[in-house]
Amino acid sequence: MHYQRSKQLFERAKQVIPGGVNSPVRAFKSVGGTPLFMSKGEGAYIFDVDGNRYIDYIGSWGPFILGHSHPRVVAAIEHTLKHIGTSFGAPTELEIELAELISRLVPSMEMVRMVNSGTEACMSAIRVARGYTGREKIIKFEGCYHGHGDAFLIRAGSGALTLGVPDSPGVTKGTAQDTLIATFNDIESVRQLVREYPNQIAAVIIEPIGGNMGVVPAHPQFLHELRELCTQEGIVLIFDEVMTGFRVALGGAQSLYGITPDLTTLGKIIGGGLPVGCYGGRRDIMSRVAPAGDIYQAGTLSGNPLAMTAGLETLRILVEENPYPALEEKGRQLEEGFTENLRKLGLGLCLKRVGSMMCLFMTEQDVTDFKSATSCDTKKYAQYFHAMLQRGIYLAPAQYEAMFFSIMHGEAEIAHTIKSNYEALEQIYTTAPA
Ligand SMILES: *Cc1c(COP(=O)(O)O)cnc(C)c1O
Image 1 (spheres, helix red, strand yellow):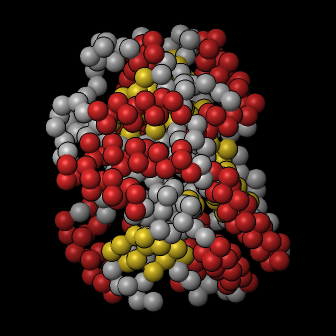
Image 2: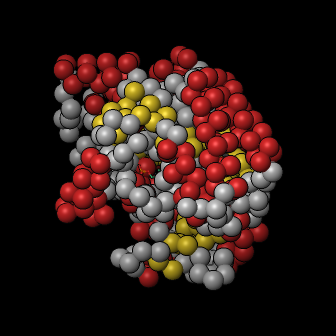
Image 3: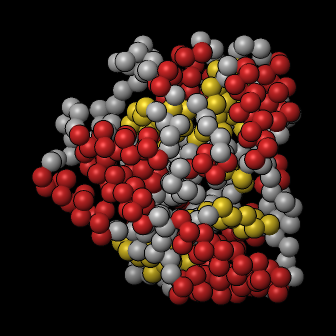
């Protein structure tokens, strides 16, 4: 395999785009090497500009549960493009249809507001929670990602329960002070913050299945206790299901856990590969959003027909085909294959999976929170990533990401992935690094 053209494009891109990419993790910084520029996606496969073909386990970081360029989604987009248009800045029927479908499939979302990204959905959701409660602080969990909004780019200081400090220059101390950090899967860490800041906490936001520190499901009891605590304290519980929504089940992680959050944020799959996010939830809370209420939130391209069409067609296919049992079966095969490989090689690495999200952690510790996730040997992951890439498998170029697969990943792709996983692990764990 050669990457000549990608290398040229990367050099060119770096002149006009910071780091040569429009989102940092694409740059291969944590695994080394040149990011690959893509030319085409088809089903389970993506092709780079040098003509190399890969089985794709990123799926645009989550949206492509139906694989790339699903013929029905492409046809629907074409139809809207030709016969309707791309945007009016005035309402269309498509927005109602998508909102109704989401609300039917995720019943906790009694009302829905469309935005243009997961980041925007999460920023808006906490504004609404703050407006609704009249309180200013929010709690987030270490290792959870809710987009790049200022309030979310905070992690704990030395102790997990201290005031937040900004993770990025440009996030003000004032903002950081309003974000409190708790430990994932540790209800006591939340209780302590609630005691410390009585009647000051507007919202708790959480990924019910952590997908941005690898794949780290919350313990059911932890989530149930969190729900109870929020209800008692009048805190708005926000499930960030931007990744898990329509990925782990039609009703999202909340349907798997049987928990009703007050607000939910969605993105990724609901855009079918176009930029969409949404937030929604309890009618009494959402009724406060402008123009029904006084909490302002707006968007020039929000709910545009093209994005609505891609999302609607994707969700309609998911409803018609109910691919979740088949995805679970594919996941089981991958998980069993990887587990068998680890056993044969005498490796005790942690492997976690929920449906079509999986993560192989380069650590023998059980990963349950951010701290245990950071026990991973990220240098080993970098070697593993490149060893897989050479075998035509495109994984996320960073350890703390999920491996996503689609309904288009068939027997042949799964078998090749399992075989490559064995060879790659054997190469990096039994021979000295080059
Ligand atoms: C991807 C993601 C976001 C951010 O969505 P963008 O569309 O990238 O802004 C927020 N929360 C979670 C859980 C995500 O996985």
